[in-house]
Length: 276
Image (cartoon, rainbow, N blue to C red; front, side, top):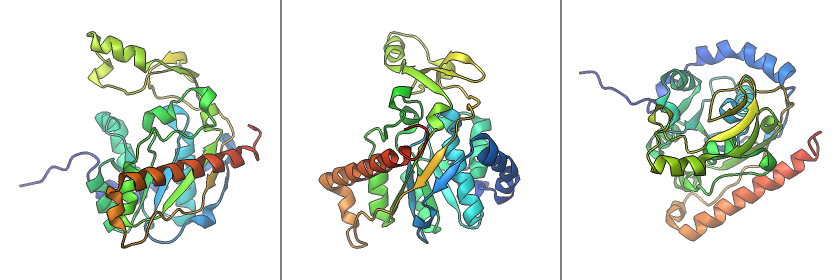
């Protein structure tokens, strides 16, 4: 009897051939459309790592795509990295299928553990949709949304956290406000969510092709220049200290350290860009 695997729960859906087929398109976007400037790749250590980032620009999140392109052109497809993807994205079959081919997996500790057991790296964006769709006036602020699961995961598996930051991608979609709190109240009063999916964020924004629009819709990023930086690895504890994953005070301290480091690195990066 054939076993059915839930979407996002298999590491074997990653398709190196598909990834290679996308490289020419990414190369064009990287060199000519977003004119990416990237630095810090010498900080990537060998072995298992957890890349922790803040993504920008809505569902398109072009800084994510450019980071992935940089990874593949530097390390090839033989060094796998899997990205933890929010459960709501798995409700959109066509998007989920292509994301799986690129290495997306469900954001669940068991799937992450399986990836680490294979010696693979993980790519996580703790801030989720609230980060990707944060209002434009917060474009230069790191938002991890207070989520600390990635800290506990890194401690339990003894992997270093490698933060990365970017500037420019939030200029590819101008988010004016998040209407979610008001719509959440209307939902509580009986209004249904589109497609019966709670989006957790409901931006009002300016972008292509919609002009002025609302809701987390797919978009075409504006051609803003993107700058990315890979930061020094952060080792949270020793290999014999995995019990600290259950120490709330230690986890909070580690979270604040990662958040502070990322904000400092972003501030420094911005000073080297036209966005300063």
